[in-house]
Length: 432
Image 1 (cartoon, rainbow, N blue to C red):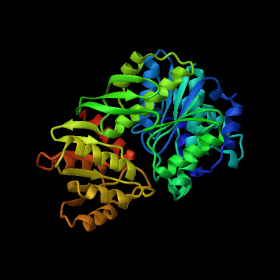
Image 2: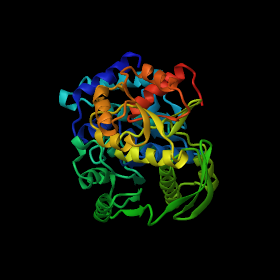
Image 3: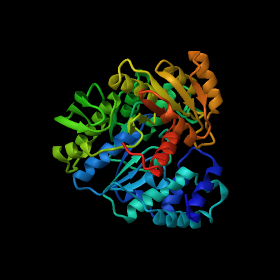
């Protein structure tokens, strides 16, 4: 990061997370509620939010809309989180807007100071207003009910699969976590739900009834089927839902992306039903053009290196399925780093039978699990000698690609680690 505005934003992490929307509503009202100047779509859930946001925003662009996209976390630069029609906010404009927010917030008492995420969300919503977007596609940061993004009044709410994540804030059961995620559902709204565990499905349906919201559920109201697979070039699928569309090509891989594509397409068709001008051809073209980094992304060919942002058990399960789909009966060399608030022992158990070698490292985040703890657990699970600890990510990546043999290499465990590796690849001009 650079600039005094950027530095102000970074310091806000010191205030910690305080649940509630009062601060957000107060600060936004102070700048005339920019988030009410355009239509919005809000996406909650544990995994798949970013991919669905990417699909929807690209299809809306193809339909001729000016689309603001707000996602988190970033992989390399914070400006990645705020985009309009695929273009990130410039570093200069972002820095100026951080300073404007600082000037406003300097007058507020300590208890009204925004957190990092709250400040970033205010900046995104104000930037979108200034640039006169037509629609904002917004990914919920954490949870839903008290998330800073839940000040929006969306035309459509999407809830992706719910699993264990951020349990220190959201609860210790799937029902509790689903209840927080379902907190984005508004009265008389339209809700699209991805594949859910029975416990979360029950919660989401109950909240829909309470809010008189019309719910559409994956597997019951819509679905998609893979009809052709050519990794790493394309998937083709047929969609059935509010209407049917055939031969849709996507370039995000793994069976979970077929599910994510189905959620996006059903959402787009419901937007069309509610008055958006979105043709089938805009959907087909937008889906085809959608690329989302660190989602089962090949970054090197020789040896083959895949980066995946899977950072919780559900994400690792999707990664496992994709690896078995494209590389049956293959053992992999893994580079892994995980944060402390994840179920890291469960994640390691899931990976243990897939690897012939494991390298553990420290992503650039203070919440990282010490790699020697990860290595100790993996050694306990596998009894293998092929377990290494290399704290420095750059050195760990160098070691990963220097290991002899043709085994595919997989980097996973944290989006922060994925970002670290993508930064290294960019600096070294490594491309697939």
